[in-house]
Image 1: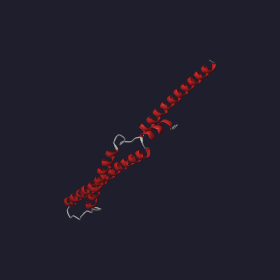
Image 2 (image 1 turned 90 degrees about the vertical axis):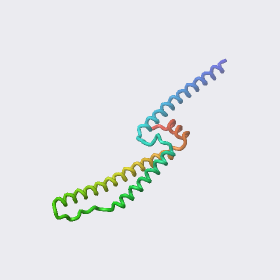
Image 3 (image 1 turned 120 degrees about the horizontal axis):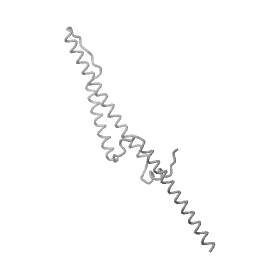
Image 4 (image 1 turned 120 degrees about the vertical axis):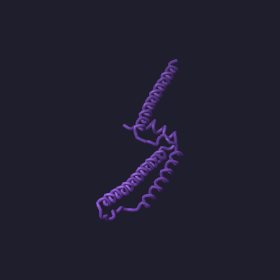
Length: 144
């Protein structure tokens, strides 16, 4: 009879240890998920297929904008005008043309930044691996 109570005590100890291990694992998993959620990832909710489509659309838009920039040409120069009114109109024209060129440059940069963020999201997903690997990493990784 003493042997059966010893085995029962060992079983109880094993169950308590497993319960504690499960509790610590759950706490660590939730802590890691919360830490991941604090990292800004604007494209986290998109599927891989949607990311690919969006990246392709951004790349097409960047290519089109770059063609516009090339067509627009380089530096804008002012033409000599004799009268004050003509000089003012020429100044306004140069300002308009230069502003349009800057706006195109801003749009290209904005799209390139968005495309880079998409590529970064795709790289992060590729590094994560499958769902089982993500689960195990969250469960067993401890980051202070």
